[in-house]
Length: 103
Image (cartoon, rainbow, N blue to C red; front, side, top):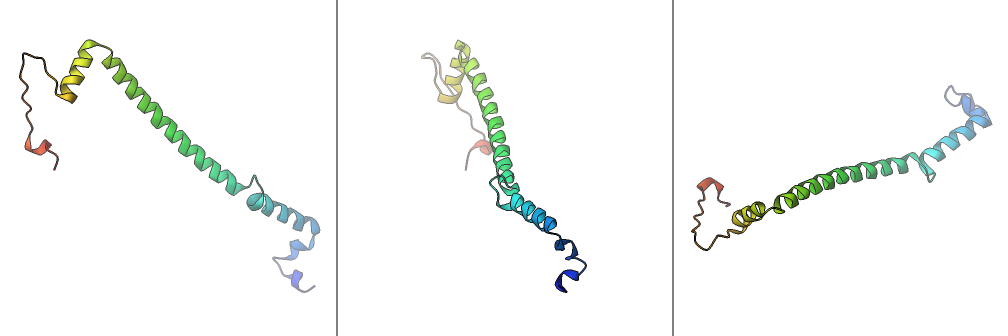
């Protein structure tokens, strides 16, 4: 019994203390609802919330583009700027600056 007489191991003489310590260790690390499992779930929740905000922003951008394309002026502007379309009686000159050319 000289082993349990040390200063740090003296509380472990009591069976209730041993049971409580084993229970706490089991709940923190080995149980299905352990602290580690909850940490992983919280990490997943944070990542999903970030993705949710990202997709909300993308939806707002797309809604703005749809609203712009719902008018005739918006359609004409998009066709001219993105697809270089023109009317039959006009000429288009594309001016590219040296610093705007992709290398």
